[in-house]
Amino acid sequence: QKSTSALEGVLYFVLGMQTWLVPETAHYTFLMPPLEPAEAQIARLGGMGMMVVGYFYMQMARTNSPFVVAASIFNRLLLVPPMFAVAGMLGARWQVCLAIALLDTALALLTFHRWQADPANGSGTHQGYEADVPKREN
Picture 1: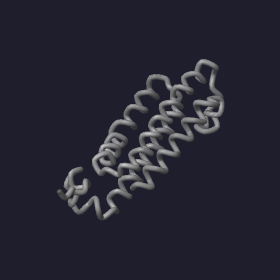
Picture 2: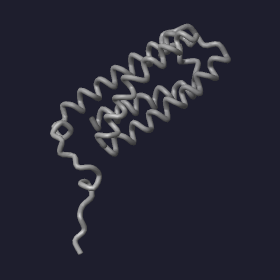
Picture 3: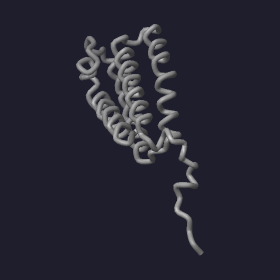
């Protein structure tokens, strides 16, 4: 799951940076009509948010904590799709809502699959962070 989280982080970071720096290209990325000038400024903010999420996923990959990975999977499967469905019903561009909801759900399921396939996560051997710290001999 470490490499999966890192790749997801890079993907979110790069897409966010593209949307932040050049929001006019968002209509190519999300397959929608070109943005209005006011929408482009909002897209910049969304791009910044995606960059932050990408950064946190890259950091999550460094820690490789099963608790962080489980929380990430849970939140992405149960919170992201309904939030983007509501945003779409409130008038946000449905193409963006659908693309992000589907992409994030697919990546969460991929992370879950990779996490479940890792024998270190299914065996129940993780004893908390104290088990990861080497003991000092006096």
